[in-house]
Length: 400
Image (cartoon, rainbow, N blue to C red; front, side):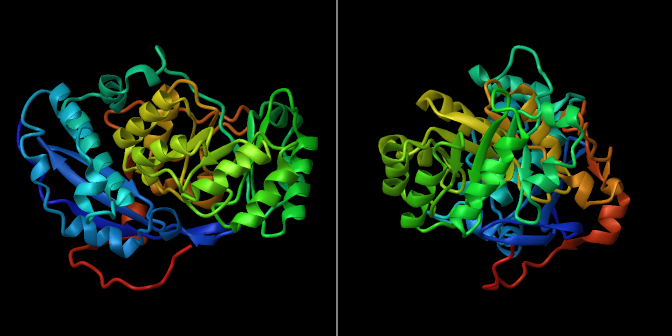
């Protein structure tokens, strides 16, 4: 099988959410994703990116522009040999940098392209994407895939009592991690964390607070002191890559830090270790540039002694959640796995197959393939997606 992908087709997808999602930095009522469709060796693959300016600096418009203006000589010859050589060749590329400009990678755009290419290549060879992970994942993969227990996220639209209290006792007892979105009011945030502790089994369930980088340094240090005896870690407690403050949070408050917006490329992890500024990292497929790029981050984190959480972007509408589930089933040693709440936000017929999750056991099983095992539905493409052939004008608007 040979040949470069046919011209990449780019779509924007915006789907209203049945209820909002909010945290200290932003709130969201509509999904905003970029979808990519491409063909390799006669097979069609789909990918998705969720650009967020507050995460990677990308807007939906800038991600679309990056994809439409892409000139990628790096892809020449990648898909001209065996299944194995194509996967390894794609995994070796730095698509976020190749699609971006010097010093400004575009991982969400890259995630859409990488996922589409990998999906198409696997389908062309009638292989599941799990076979591709096995070729490049190395020591971070389980010997046998398993379905992990997914984490629950308490965002600013509901209290722990409203979310956790509504769960049946069996479902609450099976929780292994709860993430609480931090508020500007630190004492109110502590009350949310304490309430979460009261509603869960401390011996079984870890608890974290995620500030999404919204707390200024002094406030982040105060928050760490307030929360150190209540949470297992603080996620992105201050502005991204403020290594000195993150170091102080760990050293002075004794509160472990999980990087999120601070950790987009492997070099970010090197800086964190150099400053003793982190214990954990949150790896997300869109934020890190795709499933293979996410494996690169996970391998590098393992090398540096950082433990990892596999996270999601809020309001993933299709290929992203399929790719995330596959990684979650195969990556070993994750401290927590997020699975999103698409079953609450969106109608079930946006994808084939539809989003499903066992909310009693908190299991989100991966799809069997071929490829990532998912395609956007006719409804998603007809009612919520728009093909883009001309690069949009960039604006200064910051989407939530």
